[in-house]
Every structure is written in structure tokens, then in C-alpha cells.
Length: 502
Image (tube, rainbow, N blue to C red; front, top):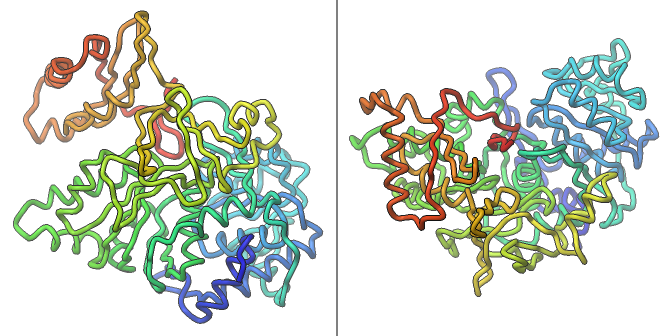
């Protein structure tokens, strides 16, 4: 069947995988399971509920961690022709209310972990007509029960959906400035999920550990997984990843570099008493073969390090504005050092060292922000803000961020990320920011104090200066670090765990 919208994805999955397991998740001490047929039935019930409330075509917010209720609600909303607005569950209530107002949300479906938001919107968001709790057993104090609504709206549902109509508004969690509402169409998300055949077999088991309001998780862990017939196991807490790896025994996990680095530290700490592949089996549940990395830069050395443990890391590149994947390495075509080959639906070019991309995954624009939209898009080309190059085989290489570029008095341009990526390789350096300060290059470092203690390093600033001196000895004069600041606390980060650059 021709697939042009997310309703087509659900129908395709139902037709092809039917009673196969689609989701597994913990309920108390038991593991519950939903089939592809269950997903179809439940999403149709949510779509019928949306229409019954006259919310068709309206904006509906979803707040919570990854749950089956969240996923089926998302598809139910967008497959009714309405617009889903996933909101970061880690934000404070007042910030969430501000986003709900900016996105013109008229209905809220929330997880009880954010019951405070349900209370706050009653006064702060007067345009919201319906509030639905994912866990409530019955309607109470004006809050509706998702369970009751699901059962009361059972039945078939169809509607016409234009592939180019607005499907989802996702707010960026930028490291600087106000967050922008990225408008993604059905075509944007559908083609990003379906255009690349990664040769993942039907029944592949994955564990979803990333925040579901981020498009990397939404597109790859949810939409693509549904399309290819995966079994998606839901991690119930960031604190339980190790336990859930052993419980669900996934074949594949999507991670951000911070997680990959953390897991490698644990593998390394296990020592060499056992073969490395045995250590990995114990750490990752026994079946993990592939980790997909995205969301930030990953030192290419980790690809080789994990290969020693029998695990393949596939590094990709993307951004919310591109639904999100722009390029990806594949198991049989994995070029270390790159962030993969451009997707089949994407073309790229370099303009003044900046990567520009064009294709069916590029966003419609920023919601109610015409000036920012015009700045980001030019003749259909998305200006990524990333510096780098694309080789003759269409592999993409990232060297830094345009907005972070240091322009020295002598006219030399310095990418701070290139310096950071070199220095952070030392075990003593946990986090680093390189910037211009008083016309020289400054490095601010948060050291790994635990590593220093275990390694009997008593003078941390002196040791860090040695690391800087070693870097400077091989660097051109204009790229040398002239000033070092040692931090006692971690850098402030956004909810994507990226360091905020002020």
C-alpha cells in the first residue's frame, strides 16, 4: 500500500503484523503486551474520542514519559487529522503552560506524574477545554479518564489526511534563546521513518530509553519501529535501564552519547577477568548487538571500543527541523568519523562551511515565528547551523556549530567543538566548554573528581594544565588555549542534556 501519512503507517503495520507483539511494558511486577491489532483498535478509539469532543483539527498536548497510553494517544490524535503537541515532562508547570498557550492547545492528555500541570492549566490556560488523565479510573473534578474514554469510543474510524498537513508541533530545547515550535507534517515524519531500509528484521526487539517528546525517539523508536514490525519495550525509568536491559533483552537500543559514554565506563570498570563479549552480555541483557547514536557528537573512538565488546554503534545526524534524521551509518556501510550517509530523501550542500539540507523531511516552519522561519529556510533549503563537509560518497562530517564559532582578531575562525572533542578524550576531563574570553581562547573544564580520586591525582588544576599544554604543543598558535578555568560543579544543561552555552 502507498504510505503518505501516519494513519497509513498504523494500517500497514496492522495488515502485515496483526497479532505479533508491538509493545511490552511493566505493570507492577508483570510484563504487559500489546499487539499491532491492539494498537490499531486503541488509536482508532482515541481518534473517535477526539472527533466526539469536536477537537478534530485542533491542537492536543501530550505530557508524560514513554508509556503505551502516550503512544496510542499520539497516533489517535494525529490520525484524526488533529495536531499533537508533545511537551517535555521535565519542565516546570509555568513553563509548560506558556508553551501550551503559544501552541494554541485546546485539549491536554497528561500522565499523573504531572498532575500539577493539570491543576495549573485550569487558571493559566483558559483555552483548554478538555483535560484527560492517562491513569484516572473515572472522571473527577473536571478531569476525564483516558480508560473510560477509550472504552466508550470503541469502533472503526477513517478520515482523509493530507500528507502535507500539519501533524505535530515539537518545541526545541535549544542551548540558547527561546524554544521554537517546529511544525512537522505527516509527510515529514512518515518519509523520515520509511525512506531508509536498515534491514532490521521483523520481530527485532528494542528498548526505548529516550524522552518521547524528542523527535529522535518519536520517529525512530516509535514510528519506524511500527513500520518495520519491531517489538518495542518501554523503559519505565532512567534509573532502571540496567534492570530493564536484562528483563527485556533487546537486540537494539537508541542512545545519546552521554549514555554510551556512561555504559562504556561500566564495561571498562568490569576489568578483563572475563572475555569482553561476556561482559557486554551481562551488562546489556545478553542479546544487544546494535546501538544507534544520535542527538549530539560521539567520539568516533567509541565505535571501535564497543566493537571489541561485540556491539555495533551506528552514528547518525539530525535535528528536530528535519524530522529528525539527516544522515545515518548502516551496519554494512559504517564509516567511522562520519555521521553517516545522507538519507535517500535528503540532499545536502555546503554554503560558507555550513551544512544545508533539502528534502521531504524538512519542516514546514516554526509555529507563529515567521522571521525565524525565514532565517532558517531559503528556497526549501534548511540551514542546519552545523559546520562540516559532505564527501563524494554523500557521507556527512560535522566540525562544529556556526553560532559557537570563535572569530579571532587576526581573522582566524576557530570551531570550539573541534578543540573540546580532542581534550575531552582524557579521562580526567568530564565536561568542557571552549570560548573566546578577552581576545584569547579559554577552556572551562569540569573534571571527573571520582576518576581523580581513584587515580590519586591530588593537584587537579595542575594535571588539567598538563593536558592543555599537551594539546597546545601540537596546535597552531591561533588555536591554542591561553586560559583555563576549573569548575567544581557540572555545567547547566537543557532537558536534552546538552550544555547550555551562555
